[in-house]
Each structure stands twice: as structure tokens, then as C-alpha cells.
Length: 129
Image (cartoon, rainbow, N blue to C red):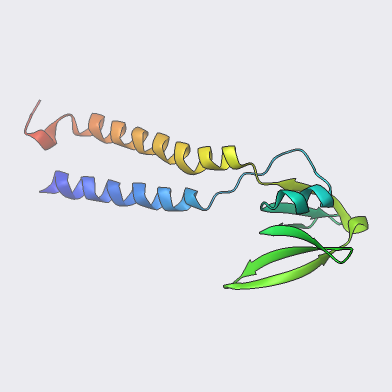
């Protein structure tokens, strides 16, 4: 029964890694303007002139002003953005976010499965080498 318990522990570890990487967001390195950010309607990271980084679910334009929407404990918070106080805006990189959310956990899982397979040397299947 020990080998089965060992495999269950490894499976739990893999599931924890998968859940951890599901919340990963990758941002593009190129900066965009407030207007482009409001038109793209994607998650964005805004860096202020003083270096503070704030993440917004989206940025939109309303009555001549730009606003960022943040989610906090299930509530939506609307924050007014001033162009002169913004150093850069980085939009979400959808492709790399998917790769990071799916590809990295699969690679980690494959590595752990390979390591477990090599360390057990077939003892789970009754082969006692």
C-alpha cells in the first residue's frame, strides 16, 4: 500500500501546482496608450510615475475621463486614471498566459511522473529489481 500512498501524495502536489499556475497572468512588454487600453478591453497592468504597479480588470473611457476597474473581494472598484501620472500600461498577453497556465504545469507534471517512475523502479507494478 505504501507505493499507492506515495503516488497519491505526488498527485496532490501536482494538483496544487496546477491550481497555483491557473491564476498566472503574463503581460506584454510593449506599452500602450490609455485609448488603446480602453479599446482593447483586456486586463492591464498600469505603472504610475512613482513606480507603483496596479492591475485592472479593464480600462474604459467615459465622458472624457479614463477609469480602471479593479476587483476586490467580489466588488468592482472604479478608479480614475490621469494620463500625466501614468508611466506605462501593459496589456495582458493572452497567448503566453495560456502557455503559462497550461504548459508549465504539464511540464512539471511530466517531470514529477518521470522522477517518480525512475525512483520507484517498477516496485509499484510488482517488479522487484
